[in-house]
Amino acid sequence: MKRRGFLALSAVSALALLSGCGGSDSNTNGMGNGNNGNGANGMGGSQGSTLPSGGIKTKSLPIPALLSGDDRGGVKHYDLSLQKAQHDFFNATKTDTFGINATYLGPTLLMQNGDEVSVNYSNNLGELVTMHGHGMHLPPSMDGTPHQPITAGTTWSARYKVNQKACTNWYHPHTMDKTAEHVYKGLAGLIMIEDAKSKGLDLPKRYGEDDIPLVLQDRFFNNGQLDYNPSRMQVMRGYVGDVFMANGAIDATLDVEAKEIRFRILNGSNSSIYNLGFSDGRSFKQIATDNAFLEAPVSLTRLRLSPAERAEIVVDLSSALNQTIEFRDYQHNKTFFTINVNKTATTTTTLPNSLTTLEKLDPALAVRTRQFTLDGSMGSFQINGKSMDVNRIDESVPLGDIEIWEVTNTMMVDHNFHIHATHFMPIERNGSAANVAANEKGYKDVIFVPANESVKLIVQMKDYADNSVPYMYHCHFLEHEDAGMMGQFVVTS
Ligand code: C2O
Ligand code: CU
Ligand code: CU
Image (tube, rainbow, N blue to C red; front, side, top):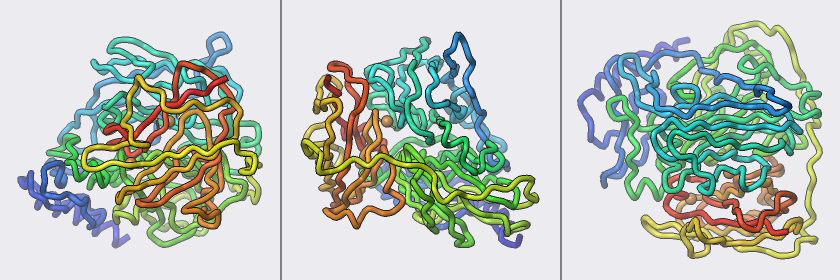
């Protein structure tokens, strides 16, 4: 209780200090939600937010609208309008944003495995965009890469049959050279896939009540406007803002029942690594990685997520009635939101010990190893010595072959690696299977590759051969991706 009073007071005094200090290299964040800075470097770029007078708008944690799909002739349609908007991060100043059926971010798309779906993106942004279903197992012509441009004023539909296990995926722009800026302005949303097995598990499933979607981000603001202006150093090291937010709200509060609560967490940042946990140090169980449940829950007190990674966790708050707990990033010492456990449970759930069965490919059956070297220097980023060229196919991957993809980061900064179209499993880090953490032994589509480290992935392209339309692999630090750390592959029949 005391703590919350202090937070409110410090936010006010920090705002007073910050007004009129634009352009300073102050790392003060004005939120009262931490005191660690952003690494601003005095070489241009964004150097600490300036917030508008009037303060941050006090909010309950926003829960994105849930779209289950509008059945038209046996196809579930999701109609999404990408639009220019103004969002209320602050009381007295509106922030120019992009939103999807909303003023910032977009609705959660609920899909059932096996359903025929059509995700209809109408581009009302006044500029070209492309929209990608991240984590979706679908044909390359439906992937929403730079090969499927949506020009201003037109609608493009990703039409496919949902064909994968229950998981939490997301959709976001994949516009050539502009992905980072488009995401920064607010274009992103979650996709929740359910299957017969997931529906039978005794897990929290009341969306927005005990099954909470979380899009975690950080931003810089300049007098209340989004400030997308990374310096070369910020591009290199990660463009980590000093204002942290969940579902488009700063310092929000979440009221929950005293019971097991499930969070579906997306690191929706451009290029920040988050190390997540609860302010009272309590442990929680990770139940899912990017593309599926883990076979069994993994107990953690901290959860590291690099950009675009997802995790589902269950935290038991059944004996926390009347407690206030912050959900924090310990990498940057920032609070995303505050949980008030202020309602008695109306239902209970008991986390199962066994969640799913995963298919584990045998490395001995791999027919080849591909090497991917992440390399570059100031302002230039490559994979295997090449910057992204939308007209060049870098790899041809035969349908059905089991392969090892070895990703080596030769740089002194962190990266990660994302493969479209399929999940993979990490089998070694730095040459040893023992270095793969228990909560990474699952279906993944993004893997963290720290500075000067390497990781081995086991991969199999099982469907959707197309000799001409490529998928992408890339670093998901969006500034690196836009600067060329991306390549293209086709799945050949
Ligand atoms: Cu999340 Cu190629 O992207
Ligand atoms: Cu993707
Ligand atoms: Cu990178």
